[in-house]
Image (cartoon, rainbow, N blue to C red; front, side):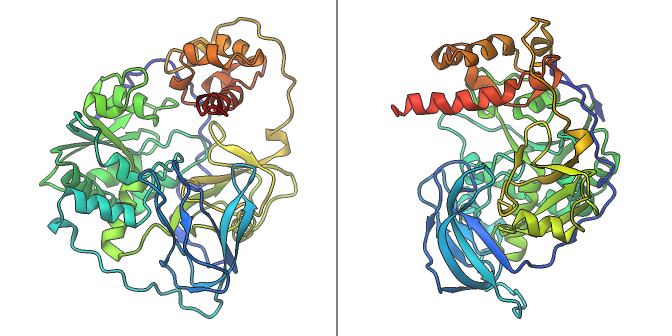
Length: 441
């Protein structure tokens, strides 16, 4: 099946995926230290339950959920808790984190965790097991999965949509998950369908991943209504609202949720992780990360323990080239450059992209020329030029009145702007200001 991309606007950046698209997933050796921030998911940070000097085994809970929109954190390697304190965070600041000195002589075998057979559990029990395992969305947002598995009151989920688009340039994490572990993806779909009580699932994959489309079709179970749809390539196809429009021709209302149109969207790597929880008994303590870019010597798709320092991860891939100039966590459209290699991989880290000097040459920001390219590219039909003007004036309230919260920060407007105005970054800062205003700070 080849489906047209029904959503309008968007952009077509070069995908740069050939560096790692054909590289099978392999496992990274355990580092000498892992650092696990208490804040590595959307919602309230976890609450630490260990102290310096404690010995932990791989998979042990070291921080518990501190509220409904929160998940526990588990040790990604066995060792000794070295410290609990502030540590560089991928967001650019310092956050409380648990530092574990990894035991170099440990076999890193996990303590046995007894999880009931998934097919014997009802919805609430499945949701509880997913929460206890610390599962979050692995597409980048890291929203707690158990919250999504409980639809808002008065909403009924009719269709489960699995997001295998991975439209961000460079990244091949989801691609390789579908090629190397398709059976695990399908098991995760089966578990989610039982949990939600839905009968129909759609898997959306952009057509630049033909091997993933083929593998997912070959391994699709015959007893479930699961349809694999190849979508025309367009960024940001992987955004929830855009994917729902492309697959089902339904529009999520402004300020609404996919549940408002009877849909739940889940990233393909998150679905595979749900299956892994019930297959192995392991919580979410590792994830696949794409390490790529012309500035890295040996690009790879690696299974990485959560908490691995970015510097150790780069070293495991042969280090950086002499002309490496910038390190971006995530893809170049929505990711953020980091300045500290001691920042750790978190549950939401999809990739590490190392760019060269020629790829990040500075460009001057010029005045807006009212060309309208940003309006033509915005997939949710905002007016980025107007929002940008309001952001420069610090008029945050006026920005919210002009639908700032509908902005996905996809970066399309910044990408097409001939004046090189960092619109997406301005909107990110404005959203933070708006949250402070709403909180009365």
